[in-house]
Length: 318
Ligand SMILES: Nc1ncnc2c1ncn2[C@@H]1O[C@H](COP(=O)(O)OP(=O)(O)OP(=O)(O)O)[C@@H](O)[C@H]1O
Image 1 (tube, rainbow, N blue to C red):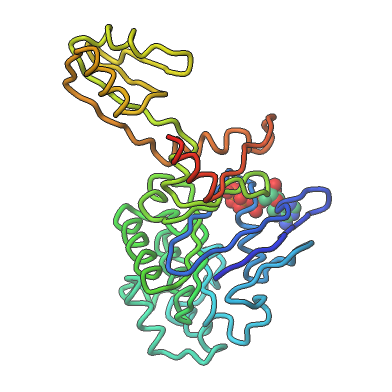
Image 2: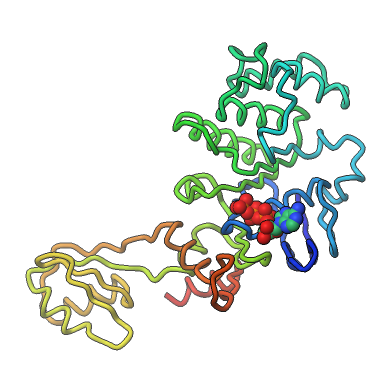
């Protein structure tokens, strides 16, 4: 488990992370999102002791990172896949890392197999592609068989097979009861991988809730209706907070009324429906709505904070 309390980091006059509180729970994949410069990497660096908080603190499994006597066995980290000694082979790189923790060749071979690096393990890391470097970074994170994993952009540079492999790997690690914190700018992939999301905007937490709740709270659901009497139905549903868009002949997309309400209104008026489909919004749409005022260097007020509770309330109110 990772717990941040009033976690703050200032660089001169710039507040990169601004009194942030969150808990990353075990047994789940938690996605860590936010626009460029939102403070994700700075937060991750503070979790693993690479940056010292200006105020507040963050603990891993109940202790500050530096208080753990064998940190590799507590927290596996992928922060910058390129930050390895390029003259070493992948095998020697992992062996050298493991040596500080009494982790031997047996475990090194295991993580090499687990990450599909067998064929390049004896090659120098300097010649690795971005994707191979990412796999090596993940192998290093897994070396100590840690209960907590922090992966910053692990799918960056991976081909589709590699992206899917990371998805299955992190889901399996979470299913084993581990804590997994994962950042990515690929929303479609995050929607498939994460159970829970923490979204930062300009150094603050702007959402901390299950993926479904975030999508439900940040987007208004749309219903697609097909009817030979679509014009009549559109007139019937007209209200100030209802938007009806004529998509094509006989097809409407309606925002502001639920599918059951539309079906009941149509039945009362004797209108035949050929289709009544609630359309689910994507995480990408929800993310854009949530962060539209949070992109650095753009003016605008901060978005409302969505917590698990307020997101549930919004969903219940639908
Ligand atoms: N060493 C540093 N010195 C000064 N400012 C810094 C330093 N590191 C980060 N910052 C600033 O802190 C803010 C947060 O940066 P950070 O890298 O944590 O964001 P991020 O969410 O990880 O962004 P990205 O998605 O681009 O990786 C940015 O405005 C950045 O310019």
